[in-house]
Picture 1 (cartoon, rainbow, N blue to C red):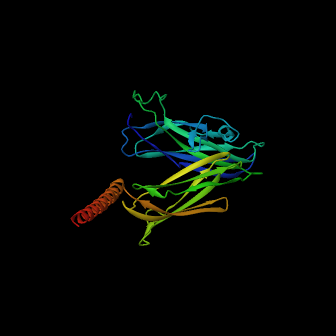
Picture 2: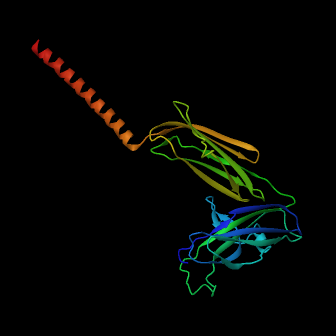
Length: 288
């Protein structure tokens, strides 16, 4: 069991427009992989979900006004077992209080190996793995939507792929917002489209939590090692569009060194030619 892994599906789920006093049902699925050697004993726990910093490090311990839903969720079967190559559906119920405030509510259903399971054939679990399914919920009522794109950045020069594009967005509302990013890349000289491709549409979405700023980076690979590409990043956020386009020079260090050496060599050669020319003129004056 020490090397066992498992999967929790879905990674996140949304419950929109929950009415105060309403009861709704949901579920997650725990999967024990086919190469597992024994049953997986699990323990499911409800935790508050928040983020820390603009890099959005997960916070599963701090209670806030936005994590009250962690007290509203009850898991039907919080402990159990899943046989190898099988999955188990774990149901839960959300009971919304009649006085629940309008706006966003967030929790995590964390699943870990259950060290307290005495029927685990005497095997001691050395490594406790934990995965979580994030609950994004919204209680119906008066909500506040305030936020904008603060930064939309593309570098003008890199020494090697990938190219990292970035953005900074804020949300001063009381409910989470969705931002859609569209990135396109083409060769500056030929116009050949590098992104999107069949495997990578160059489009993705991110959630911006209430009362936070989020810094988002995306790497663009499959680029030439040397050249110039045209990159654009479009951000659709709260009905507004922020767009930037820039030519990015990709120039490896070895090529820069080669160019510098060539320039230096050329300068030295020119200086030597000038000196030789002056010397020859001086000799001609002496002869006269």
